[in-house]
Length: 137
Image (cartoon, rainbow, N blue to C red; front, top):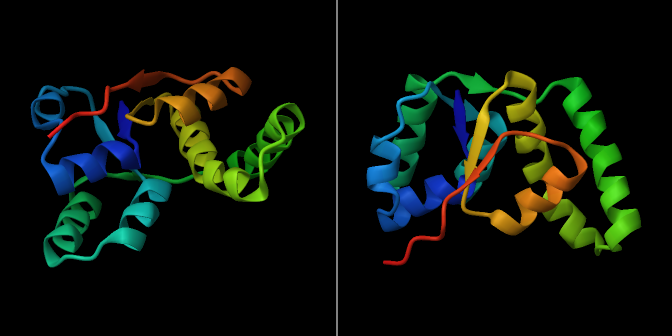
């Protein structure tokens, strides 16, 4: 089972990248409610909203559990102690931590183009991660 991170779906939708890689996925694909929320927040065009509606209709949505939420706060507290990030950076990381913890809870592989943030998170909590290099168009 796999979950695509926001970085993959934005590049796929807006720039048409990762088309072949996405088509080559034969695992069960699931949505993350956190990824969907991020995508809806930035959806400007009717085509983007239509794409999101189709995603919601055609793929099951995995949602963070209560434990994922509390664990995300604990993980970010450790990151903050170690790295001393600004409150803004911690806030930006929070959704990524929730996506990672949700994938872990369901035994899903998370596919992202956001190497730095997700490899940082994985130093604190193991989860199945695959990083696709940023596609150039």
